[in-house]
Amino acid sequence: MASIYRDVFVSLSLRFIVVAYSVYHDASYDVPYTDVDMYVYLDAASRVDAADAIATMHRAFDAPTYRYTPLLALTLSTLGAHVVTSKVIFCIADVLVGVLIHAVAREITTPANAVKCATLWLYNPLAINIATRGSCDAMMALVPVTAALAAFARLDKSSFAHSLDRRRLGLPLLSGLCLGVAAHARIYPVLYGPCTLVAVYHAAGLAAAAAFACGCALGGGVPTAICLWTDTFAEAGDMPYLSHALLYHTKRVDFRHNFAPHWLPAYLSRFRGGDADDSNGTTYAEHIVAGPNYPQLAAVAATMWATIPSQHAPGAKTRQLVVCYLCSTMAFVALNKVITAQYFVWWIVFLSFLPIYCSRWRGVLLSCAVWVVAHGAWLACAYQLEFTSPPPTGAAAWTHAASCAFVTMKCLLVCVTLQLARKENVM
Image 1 (cartoon, helix red, strand yellow):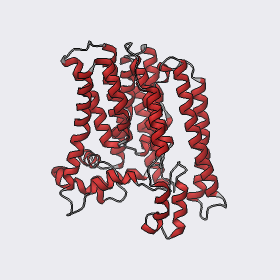
Image 2 (spheres, one colour):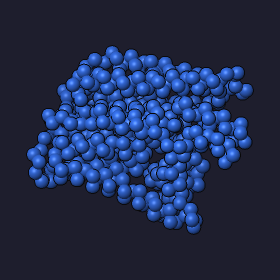
Image 3 (cartoon, rainbow, N blue to C red):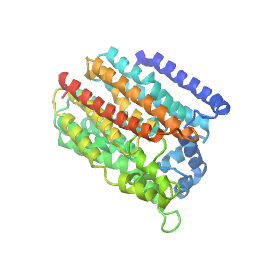
Image 4 (cartoon, helix red, strand yellow):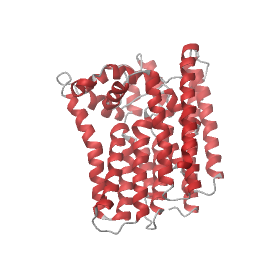
């Protein structure tokens, strides 16, 4: 790991410089650099008393639009609820993701390729932007997910015999614990459970798979149970964690900063009875965008089935698992009813492993370039719609067209990745 020390130091320093600039930018410009979610986190953290955490964590949901685990608010409250200190924490977590990517890659490829994988994340401008604007995704999801992958990579490389021993059970248990924590914090990592379970079974047998399942149950179940317990301290009949952090995501309607084409019905619903947050304003949208998302479920299931690990050679299952994580996450995000910029890092983190499973980068990089162009087109249209008053004629139609093009490019990227993985005999 000594070979990436310099990159870790440089990339962390770069993030700290951007954080320092963000303080100046926020004070000098009308459009702030810091994400509005950062202030939501801090508002929630200010309502939680770390000395009496269990009895006060439910108060985090008194902050408007706070939809995360109250353990995040407790963590920030304990470490100091301030914009700069919170960003520093998120940046450190972001760099830790790069270290864990290196830990995964060095188990299955050459040291030089492992460093390439790490640097693809450490110097990724989108990852730097998301972390320095104040997104918790690196700390709450990417660190535990990559830690789970690192534990599995060590298990896969070792190729333990199918016999009971502590070493063989410890790694899948650790992997399950990390994945369970990630699923509790951000929900979407639950996607990785079934394919990882199959991979663990192929790598080390039934006992290891059972240990992984127990780890998932503990890692996800214990913090969820604690959060549900804190709901009992809320007002009678009120279940803020259950309502705002879990059930809310099954019926979320969002017409601001949403890349998905589903934003248009929510946007139009504003003209059917007031603001989109009112019951009259969401009725029309809920019929269209708040129901089950069957195309998304079908696409995720299909990509998982196509990429689920099955090879028995040491290291091969880790490569397959990375492709499975990447493609299933891209499919999930591409067809989700709400897509924000933070969601991109969910799959871009696995794109960092490109050097170990794809020797032909041209197709993937070309698809990424087209996706970036579609991203820029959407931003240009959405800026006119959201920040220009009154918005230009046809701004909503152009933004919707850009959303459709954006989703199409994401689906194309999934197909290209699957095709290249097959050509490289990863699957």
